[in-house]
Image (cartoon, rainbow over all chains, first blue to last red; front, side, top):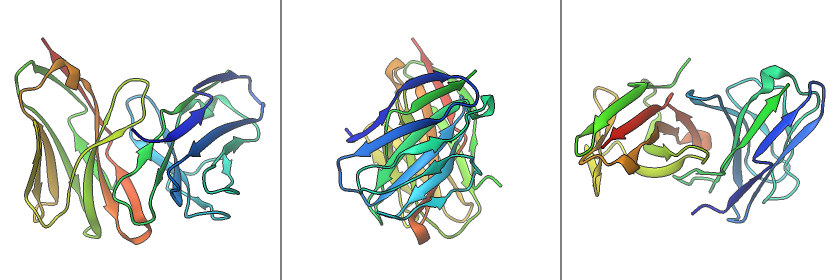
Length: 112
Length: 112
């Protein structure tokens, strides 16, 4: 069982609101990821981090931003949510050269 | 451009039957090929994985077959059970940067 936690699990917000999706892991992993997954679709990497103060954009362009001030914490922020941001966001972590990505249970975001 | 192509998109199998999911890739820089299992409302979890220097790996009822020359790999679930009903993702890792690329997923339903 992976020790990676995401909150909130489900969120419905109005257009234009600012939201932050929280992600924490207790495994001491340096590398963390955010994936976006629409129902029945593939996982798209939107952000990743090699460690504290490191953030990189993934393969899928996203209007969200991330920060990595502490090893265990990798929050994702949308400054002004839009209906097109409606999706599931999955946080994950791994050791730097680790073979396994550990996923959280996901945050379902609905923007109305 | 999709790095890993997965088929079929959905699969229905009778209990006790064999479920087969196929994936293909192009990038020869990939060095590790995991399969992830995702139940509704949960994040993906590592199921089984293989390195390209072996042609087959078996763990219980789950087997990966790997064809390096064809750049294809597949997941076989023997004696499929209703509890195996889930979405399965194949993935490939590029060692440089430890980046994982996921297939589009296969929704497996095992009917009693």
